Length: 253
Length: 306
Image 1 (tube, chains in turn green, yellow):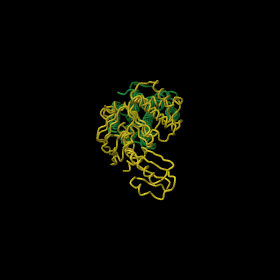
Image 2 (cartoon, each protein chain N blue to C red):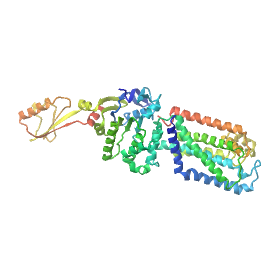
Image 3 (tube, rainbow over the protein chains, first blue to last red):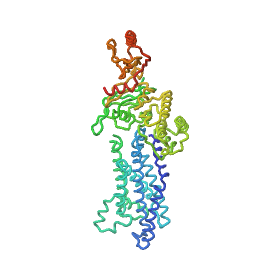
Image 4 (cartoon, rainbow over the protein chains, first blue to last red):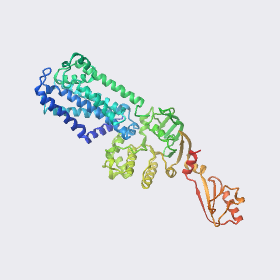
């Protein structure tokens, strides 16, 4: 295994985070804080509890998940798209690194950045809302698993995209609505029956539900199903990445 | 001797049906400088890209440093350094980080002393902490070469290395290539500057429409296909070529003051002596004479337009 190669890609990507700290860290932290202030402190103080949890605390897992998904996708898609755009991808393709090592470098870095950001947001949330973590191990597991899964998804988007616009389409047009409709601000039990059923087709419901369970022990769906669905999505992304490298899709002619 | 690059019956057809390479066979030996010449779209970059792993191979077998580029791609690629045609650089990185990144990517442990040497050899040491975006085009080209040399490859591909660089830098690069050859590095270069190939190459390969049409030792090629020209500046104007001279391939310049005699570079110069004797017999006086050999460029143009 070319560990030096993996390390080179990983360090290169992490250095990009340092260079763009305003965009990569500060910007998502500030925008998530605004949610805490508006929905947690201001509106939340006038709302009742959901499942015995204060509303401000209830929305924390969903908001962390929102940032986690967006940043995982954004980091990984930019990470692989930029070398394609600038032409420096030639170096990665001509290097003695396997497909697995390339993915490990890019996706590993993207997931690391997302986890760091998730933890920063969690720490910042303390300034606005009081919350607890009932199952810290599972909370971290969900954080890491979701970051890896959606970084892989972002990697696929980065390879698929042939313009900057396409990089933004999936996160803005698909992921954001799914997160907002996936129980970030409410329990799906609060929806009419038909919308509850429809919501179960939204994969983000399982992520948020599982993540919230790790915090407070309450969930819209059983935690085992949440873990299972996340693993299924992870497996689908891995199959897609395997196919991309096998065929050279948009990488090798 | 085992070749450093071995290409056997290589074909490449792109997805749109365009056949870029047709049954290419080529062997390049350790320590030589091989120039691959061909017009635009002839298949030079496709061939290099396949050997380096950037483009998928079609039928045929390709080996680098004795290793199959597909089955044993790690060993094959470890041996290769590539300087691509385009100036593709990470604009926001510093020179030092970009070059160090390349070394790591190719599986080599950090070796700051080697990076320092490469940067100094390429006159980049003073710029090591500069972002690449702040460098001139010529300096960026040097960075590309430094990246390719960072992992100490035994085979170096230079795809149009001096395109768009000034004369001084071009001379520097030629010097650098010669030094590399002294260390035993095999160098394969494509270039549009035939003068460059003439100056540096040991062997020349010519590719046309995806086919290798010629591979030859440079000196042998120039003597085999080259022409020589004798130009006589006459004392008095000639209206037409005298009948006695029509046996030789002689032309008269438009102003009537020059006789131009063209002959094969390999041919004994008996024709020259005969021509000068005949001129003496005819009383045609000349005040000066010049000879010149055809350049590789002229040979190349002749080959690709056949």
